[in-house]
Image 1: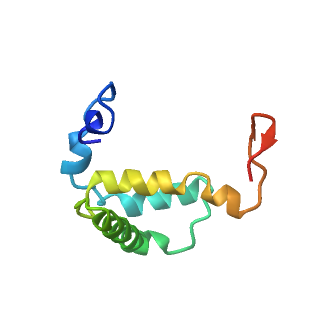
Image 2: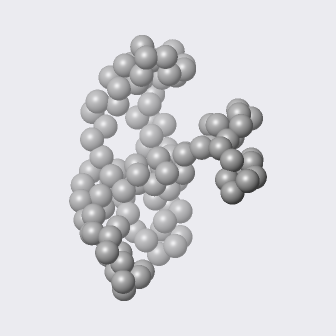
Length: 109
């Protein structure tokens, strides 16, 4: 995200410096959790009070993992939230045993 051309000289992907430089705004997380609960997302009661703690636990783990790969990034940066989001894609569906879309004639499990 900082220098896509470093990985592939022909990349046309733009630089996303702010994802690495900007701090994640967690001030509205509790409110967002409550709104999602009203919309039917099954967060447990009281999760809004501990959501930021959970967020930082996961962010610290991701940041520590990156550090083992030689990448130093603080856990409170926007890029860490993006990585956390990407890591979660599809996880809940797979753990619930729900069917997924067919890929090239076969079912992904």
